[in-house]
Length: 208
Image (tube, rainbow, N blue to C red; front, side, top):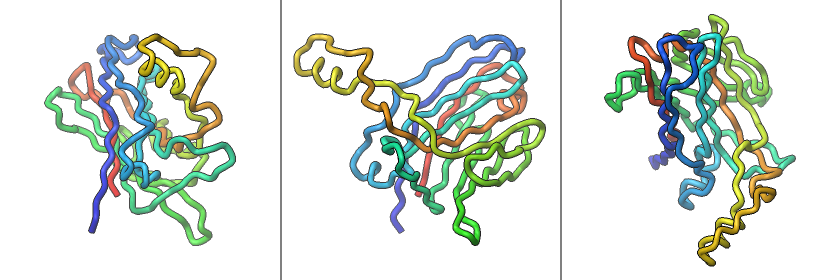
């Protein structure tokens, strides 16, 4: 059996003791829309971005985007064999203290839905249809579906800069304009995510 894996860049998020306070630090690596050919062949497993932030009502929101460069009007691609993970380390040892697992599947009518297991502070197992706000317990929510790609980048300007050694970026030229990504959005309890600490690291992975 052949196994392929994709991993997003690490996101480090610092929290004050009270969740309502602003972030103390945030280190986020660049997006990863263009991978090795073998990884890009499996669009359903190809992560493009991971975002995370905390809210004033004691929640951490994480977004895992995959299957980038989908043209407007094209349906997203799902694969029930792909497992998506959001991993959280809250004691700075580089090992996940929370693993949230997601998987897509179809009902008898062929409609796709999502299942999540291990949402910190939420119901142990949550499932529901796409493009719907799904109750994850204790005021937390889960959502998945197609969204406009929020990443902005002038790829033409990047290539021109490399070839000419002169900055040639155009702030009005977005290579990703008109393209979509598939998103998994999950709310988690800040207290459950952070535990006894005040900072955490969050990253994502896929396995097919």
